[in-house]
Length: 250
Image 1 (tube, helix red, strand yellow):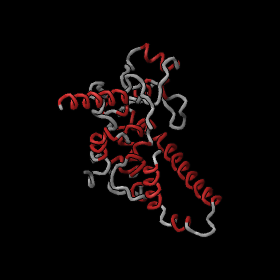
Image 2: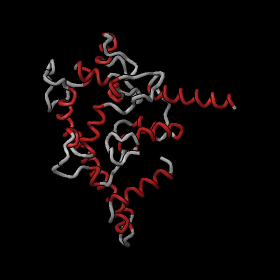
Image 3: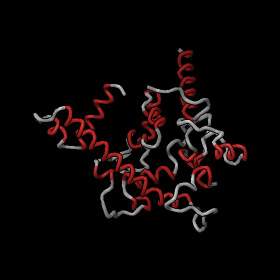
Image 4: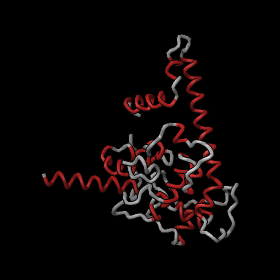
């Protein structure tokens, strides 16, 4: 992470924890104490992620199940071993964009592990209506109903998923003063997405995504080499084509 990015992150951390700066400036705050504070912050973040995962584990079944129908075979709300590629419903959502889950060969190789899925082979559920266009890889990216529902569940409140106006407790967004979608909050989904969201050349599309107003409608306004033909690779290829076209026009 660049020095500027770390400085910006530290500034945000001070804003989230008002007493942190005062604590760090105390005379007895030596290197050992700073390490202890950092450990406490990391442990708190880890516990929060764990709580989010536990609460989503059951709720997500309600979102992906067709109303009035049951899963076949059944999916237990508290067991994850029967999910993933082993189940047709979850497998179809997790299938990498660009592959066809309906293809028996693809399905079999994903289940057996013969097809290894790297981090930048994004699952199709990241796209609106699970529709991925390799010629326009930005279209619908991170705008799927499932993704938005999970985001609202974690950052606003579980009740906001059902468009309820009254919540029994403050959501994470309210607690931390969030009034709009941020890069960091989206990037928790997948490390390779974080790389893309920090790509300066994709700033126009990234800003359009952050300002789309799906979650907060009242306030809207070092990279690794990507896998060949992955969504990330297609996005960067298309950007390179646009730059080359602009250069030749000049």
